[in-house]
Structure formats: C-alpha cells, structure tokens
Length: 473
Figure: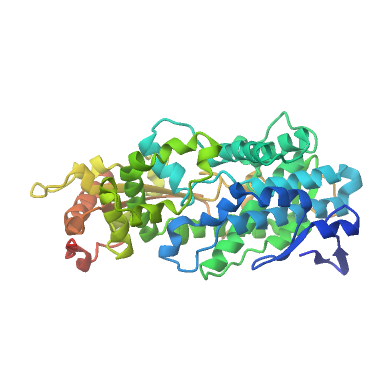
C-alpha cells in the first residue's frame, strides 16, 4: 500500500509525517493481505510488549480452523492490518481535505494507535469466550473485550512506562469503543475520525475491511467486496465520512459479504458444535484454573489465551478428567451431534423468543427419555449489521466531487434485486450424546409443528445420523 490510482493521478505518501530520516526508528514488515506495512516508533513501543504479543496466541476465528484448516491466522496480524488501513484512511483524507479538516500529525497517530490496539483485550476463541463461556460461569456480569482493551492499554502504558500524551491516550480509547457506544454527542471536534476504526454511526470501518478480506482468504473463499473503492472515494461532509452515490452497491456487498461469512464460516454448524464442547470443557476446568477470575485485572488477564485448551489436554490432574475427555473427543472427531435447524418464518420474526432446551424436551414423544442436559439449542441471528433495518439507510452519500451536500438513498432507487428483509434467525439443535440424535430430531420436529403448524426445517435429519452410537474409550 502507499501508491494508489485515482483517475490519472498517482498519489504517493510517506509512512509518516516525520522527516524521512525517522524511518531508521521504524520497521517494515510484509503482510500477506496488505503487502508492506510500516510500523512507526510509538506503535512499536506497544507492539513489543508481552501483552500485545499475546495476540499471536489468539486465533482470529477461534475454533473455525477445525472446519476450515487455513483459518489459523491470529488477532496479531489482524491488529497490524487494521493499524495499516486506519493509517491509510486518515492519510487519504488529509491528502484531499487536510487543510479543510485540520488533520494534524496528532490525529494520524491517534487513529493508527486505535487501529493497532482495538483488540488488545480480546478473549480466547474469538467471541465464544465472552458470549458463551462467561454468561454461564458469571451470569449477569457486564463484560466486553472492548472495555478490557481500554484497561489493557492503561496497563501496558504503566507497566512499560510508555511516554504518551494523556489526551492522545484518551482519544485512542474513545475511538476503540465508538462502535459500542454509537455516536457520542460529546465528541464534536473531528467526529469523522471516530468513524475510521470502529464506526458507531453506520458500521463502515477498517476493522471490517481487514477481517472480511483476511478471513475470506484464510478460508479459501472468494470475496467480491473491494474495500479499496470505498477508501479511494470517501469524503468528509459535515464532520461525517460519506461515500459517492455510485458506490451504493459496493457498500451493500460489504454487509452482505459479512452476513455470508457469519452463515458459512463463523456460525458453521460443526464449528458451533466444537465451540459448545470447548465451553463445556472450560466450565468444568474453571474451578481448577480460575479462568473466569482472570477477567477482572489486566495483570492476570493477559496470561489467558487459546493455549488453555492444551493445558487442559496435557494435564494429568484428576480434577480435569471430564474436561480432558471432552478435548480428546474433539481431537478424535467425536463431537456433539448437530441434529437439524430451521429458519424462523419471516412473519414470526417480530415476536420471536429464543428457543430453549426445555422447549424441545417438552415436545418429545412419550416413549423418549430425554433430559435437558442431553439437548443444546442455539439461536443464531444473522443480519446486515443493523438488526432488522436496512444498513444503507444510515449511510450518507454525495453525488460527485463537485457537490457539498449529503444524500440518503433508498433501495428502490438503486435496484429491485436488493433484499427486503435484513435479518435471519436460525434455530439449531444439538445433542451431547450421539445415540440420542433420533429422539432429539423427532422432538425438534414436534416443536416446529406445535409452534408454527408445520415443519419449517428444509429436510429431515439424515438416517445415518440417527444410527450413531457413543464411541467407547
């Protein structure tokens, strides 16, 4: 990156605003997605710490590599990628609107650090740790990896005596939680800078640009979304990053590609089955390792990463026998059985309530003997990043580079082939015991008929699944 075409002009820029000789204090690395990346002096102070290097031991897609073998990339390279794209984005804005917007070296460095450090507080196994594990061992606790990132940044600064301006540090942390908090009315000056890393206004940010490109490559999937087009045409109007109206379909591809990744990769039925087993293993190992107790303080939390599974697997402690057996079942591909799924009918989405294992148990046949612990139900919501709403209605466009007014566009003005529904709710049922697949599948069918008056699943559970038996060890 560093050279790009815009019309007939070729834009070139240095890796920093500092004099050329300052490059002797930076590092040049080669990323398999973005090519050469320059790491500046201040960023290296954070990168070269054990807390940031921990990200090497956090796979970006958690346990997805058990289904997609190439998905072994880590949050370390993703963080470097977001750092680079954040740097690229803010420099492009400075190149074309720098005098108008008052973008300074301070702003560039702040945005770059926000991109670099946005995931430094992430938990093991992608989002499974905070969405599946923590609610079951510390129910009611309000914990997020974004908030932990803020704590971790302060801890790194203190632990390694990093010299950084307090105002810059404050703005870095505000940018990291911008998408979580939405548009903050208190951030009036240069609000557009908060749209770059974690966009709370409309969801278009360099974090998505990087993980969509990186994840599709790692999984061997095609990607028809080109973030470069948005980077080259974006423009700030009224303190908000806007996009050229002709890029409407490019932006739609951003959100549809993200939804496709959720359906085919992140929420893959087998991936979820393995995640459910790891959650059970972590719960059973929690008392021994005090896993959940480590989330309160960065000094303990930074030692927690994906290697906890290997620690369980190789331990000989009697307290970990159940957890160890679950991990070894995964290694031997004796995983929880995915029985079936159905998509909630569109007319029932508005008043849908999550289905529970108890709902399925109450629908079993009289000759079945299912217990609640035999059944696991997952309610998978897949949308275009705006819930039930059209994400493009939140985005501001402009007609061309001669115009200075923001536009809002409607789907009907662009294409009649775009979706009219923006959310799917998929209900899946699993069983911990392979020999119960038939009974659970039948109870699941009964539930659908009782709830919707018909079977809404696409097909019956395959007969070969119904004949599975538990593998004796």
